Image (tube, rainbow, N blue to C red):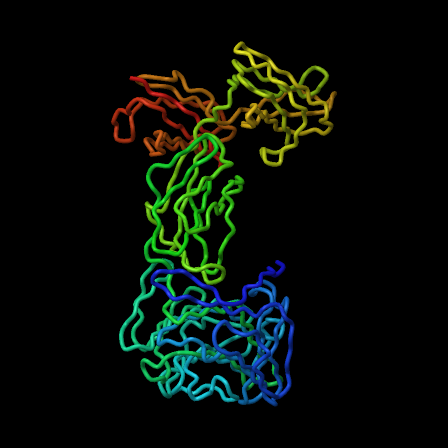
Length: 589
């Protein structure tokens, strides 16, 4: 995938009620490389707060801004540090920014050879967070434990290995369990640090975590490690961090860094999730979704025809589109409000929506991803009110071996006309328009329409759809109707397969019972579900059919508990082989 060209540089203000305002440090788009023995205050872009500094030793290695750099790593330019060959470090730091005794930092990290591979076999990189009062973040030296809160060490070994250690206290070193980092892989590093004399709380994905005094929570690709700090005095403010590399024979060890987010508070996801109102305004092709907001500074809404909606990931900030494109999961809202009108929906279709609270924007986003019954909703769009009553639509071969489309209407009012679409697979979204507008008769009496498709010249099965359009621009598709085409003289003939779906419901309206007739194109399971007009499930049945054919289900008008349902409109859903067929039925008393 080509690296996304996005420039995110400068101070990002996040209007969270209880949370700090994080800043994003991005490395811009410049391409630079420096391997000269010296230090510099102007090689890196100016940070939103504090100053930048690089130092290059006289033992090889370099500091680089690469663009495009590694594939699928960060945005635009990324920082690459090549370790020196001795203990004299090559380092990059940001120092003397707005300080506090609490902090949060996140960045993308990759360790490896110069191409991001796994062949580097020596060298050590350190990541250090602390206070610059002794100047070790802005001079040529490495870390000093007495002025450091976090000291992480990444030691390169054979076969792409990395030994990750936390240096804590004045002399102690602890190796992280399970070898969480190796060469050649992209890692998301997040650290929450507490240099106070009291325990603190933060939220990640809506879950509360207690961070003990003088401790940090280190998260590596979503796995948490609780570790003690180095030897900085309690309540000393944190105002600097640095990356540096040493002791790499032939300067083979490389460290890639990008997408740095920093906060001088325990930056958190929202703790209170948004919740949908129980009643939503639904038509045949729109829905007005409304909700009560949580305590994030904004929220996103995701809509899908699949109930398994995947929550957004931290650091992503998708563009919304309130016109649903019928392509699965889609973000239909991203903003600070409490409602959205979604259009482009299909009639008589079940939809699922979830709302997620979020703090921040861009790569600083943090979501509350908890799932509750309140932040999820299901609704069924109304049956299309297009002013046409269609009783039949079929495709068959005529005597010259051409495919003839026929449909019968019982009534038409204010109807512009019809179009015919064709495909060689059951997918109307990629079907080809094969007819001009076929003008509607607009009569209340029965009408027969015929259109002959003369453009088919290859044997195979063809799927046809009939599109109806009224004078207001409303439209509806009927079908598919399927026909098998073969060349003359090859035992051709019409093959009309079973039309899978709910064929008839009789009587309708009914009291006290009705028969639901349906067809299966092949053997398999079928889920039959009945909903009331509010979208609440009334009855659910699963049937296993050993072969294709016609089947029926007698509904006695009762719910799953045997209680007689009240008068009203009910939606019947038939699901099989990943498809969903919907019809309406009415109970009258």
